[in-house]
Length: 203
Image 1 (cartoon, rainbow, N blue to C red):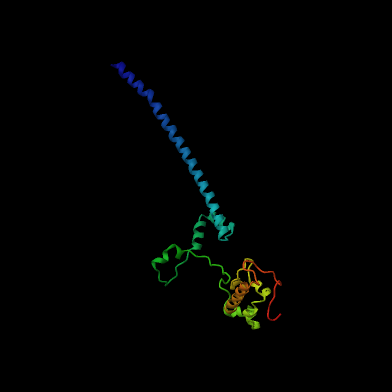
Image 2: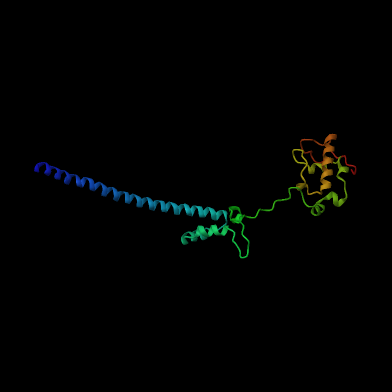
């Protein structure tokens, strides 16, 4: 009986260090690796934040030094976001749609594009040679030298944004070009060499 009890005590004392030691080493190793992972993640996040702020500074024309100072201050991203948001003013009625993303963010002003449909009437009269000299483009349907300057290399009539003519002159000029093409004195799918044919009434 004593021998069996002694063997049980000996087994417990022999197995106790084998159970405790791996736990201690495992917990200490896990803590070490966890701390290392936390530091690595923090460094990666800081590096990623710097890259994002540099890209934002390039797009929004913010100086990089200002962005770097915002990173050191710890509130750079908040300041950049706040600069893009619209502010609410006193005594201003607020509607639910004012909190939407499109209403809160500031939109960059669009650049002015040239007139796609041509100049306004007042400006077109100033640039239109036919209007200033009181010349009807239909009377110049035989003047291929003049008409070829209003035709593209593919034989298409240039739009009014390029010719800068009035609507009346542009309309009658296109009729004159089509008439010259149907008469065969002007190529249909190309630009005629200037001075090749000239059957104008004034010549």
